Length: 459
Image (cartoon, rainbow, N blue to C red; front, side, top):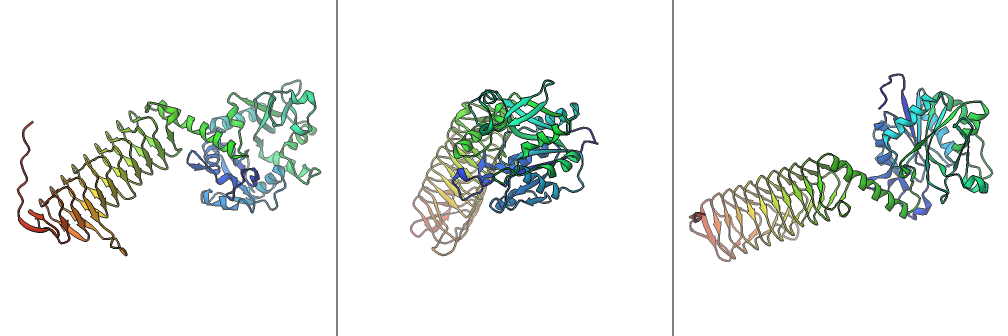
């Protein structure tokens, strides 16, 4: 972000394009990459560069308003008549703004904030009215070519389809991100004229500036990926891959271990603490958070899940779940939305928990389902236990107290309560509440005597 208080900044984010080559009913800038809509990535980048955005949409891309933060102006370009006309529309929504204006496209998600900073610096340092982000990407592409003058500044941009054979051999191309002096931009845009197709091109600003004797600067980035946009599904897949590479590199630089980085997928909003280990084939989605010294994977999927410190999640699926510290899950477990495992819970193979809280120290090791339940501390849930929470019309709750022993193959027909220190025998079908400290057995289960929990043999 600029440290010069006189350098106020706005950013025009042009997102009115139809994206017809995507062959989709969803507007292009709403397609996700690394777990976030394309437009959201761009808005984050310009905000990180200290610019207040103005988003230009069309009638077809208007659903993208859903990802525009509250208070950010949206200008409607109707009908879309090219990028120069989009800037005209944006200027109308940015009345009173002064300073530097970034112009970026809503699908160029790989432009880094620090690159925009350097672009603004090039604008000021060269005394230019316009600075263009460029890159050296060879000749096998359809980018506009940058023609520089004898002093090294930009003389003109030649569109690929209009370029001569010699001009097509130029390896420096226009990447479609700009910084402009906003006062000059207000005077220059009205001078743009539509071409034979009725479109107004933003690149014609170079000619306007040169005709006025003004300087047009260029910043050539060392990372050619910053110029990539999204026009096809193949482009989207390529950009998603690059974003995820960057995300993993950022986490590794912050102290996270990936045992096989390319096999793991991490969304942009995921948070991972230092000294966590992400093993092969793991997918972390949404707003998942992983605590220090936790180990996730191999082959686990976590979606919008919070994992505490020193946890172990192996070959399991966790959705909108919460794990406190020192929890063990898997292999082959499934935590569905609303699952909450307190400190030290152990959940083993082929267990499933939904909309339930398991108290600290509880163990649920094999082939069990707990749904719509509150389970106390220090409970042992035997293999094959099932809470029968759905009667065909409504969901019902199961309440299990502290230090309860649930025998293997117990069925708990909700609503039902098992009191503190109670137990059920193997195969019990519990249809009525079990009083604290009692043993219930049978089908249906009956409380037959006080339960004395066996003492564990010394190790």
